Amino acid sequence: MYLTDEEKAMLDGNEGEAVKLAMEILVTAGESLGAQRLIPVSSAHIVLAMYKSIYDAGVEVCEKFAALGGKFKIPTTLDPCGMDTENWEEFKTPHEYASKQIRVMKAYKEMGAIPVWTCTPYFTGNLPRFGEHVAWTESSAVAFINSVLGARSNRETAVLDICAGLTGRVPEHGLHLDENRKGEVLIHLQLGNRALASWEYPVLGYYLGKTLGSQIGVVEGMKGHPSNDDLKAMMAAAAASGSLALIHIVGITPEAPTTKIAFGGRPISSELEVTEDILAKTREEMCTKDTGNIDLVAVGCPHYSIGEIERVVRLLHGRRIHPNTEFWVYTNKNTAVMAERMGFRQALKESGVRLVLETCMLISPIETWGFKTIMTDSGKCAYYAPMQCKADVIFGSIEECVESAVSGRLLREGGKRL
Ligand code: F3S
Image (tube, rainbow, N blue to C red; front, side):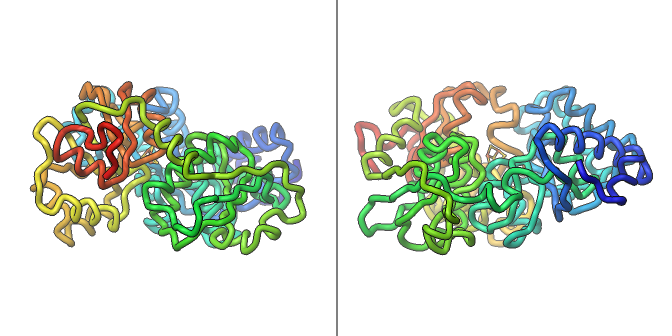
């Protein structure tokens, strides 16, 4: 692999032992990926952060880089922590688990990470521009920045993300290269002239991820003006049910002003139609049951924005949730501060809804609660929760989630839709 003089110096240890180790890992990984060289990246976002998914080995990796004197060279943000950072005891986090998570937090503090603890770093200051090369690992965020912002990142792997933050480099391969960003599969949205409802974006994403795998789709026929939150939910679901990291949406993705430009001369390998029937069937697939009591309504996967929190407050309009049902809203601290200022945090509290801070519904020890049925408005959560939370899952719109939380039971029983 070609290395610049600066990179050779890093590899020789001129910038310290942590950078040397990071370069060794990057070069080994790059060579196995067939990369010709490393490229500079302007930010990193790290998923090697939640004890539930990194285990003791992950803790040791973080501590090793910190002990070697590692300091992040580029802005480096952190994915959600493995527990609520303010109230981990209230959320029944085992003490031994918490002590390991605290070690991870300490190691990243020493290395100078920006502790946003969120899967939506693009809403909290780490916002790459069109064409900018970055090294991120959170799959939902990678799909968002490639598809909505036109920035460039692969779904980097854990450990490589730390190495990228320490050196400001990643192997040049995959979505960093123009030729690998061209469309492969053409998707026709056949929904007449209507725009998708908010709850349909994660359903569409779920279907596309499952159907496309890692292929790059080009979606034609999206009507209306999807919000950033709609696209965030769609990309998170797509990157969960499939391994994709880029979907071109014609008229939205900066690299896809037209279908022709999105394909960039590459032949269309196949075509798909998305119909009302497909959306309805996919929605059913996203539920492991469709009746009964709801133990937990969990929303905020990816982390809720202030607009989404406001919508929950509005839908509740002062009502209390059912005493046998928990309702948790996951978000980051920046958004929580705004929610506090706007009175939403208090309103949620009065309705019995908890704000869960800087953590993730899937990668925290939620199983300590023994929930049997979880309802969510997240396609990503619907995909992973049966395995990660060991519970049945019901996917629904936020309106259905709120009404079900108030009544304690799924309100679309018998096919009824809200
Ligand atoms: Fe975020 Fe966890 Fe969902 S990292 S996207 S809340 S699975």
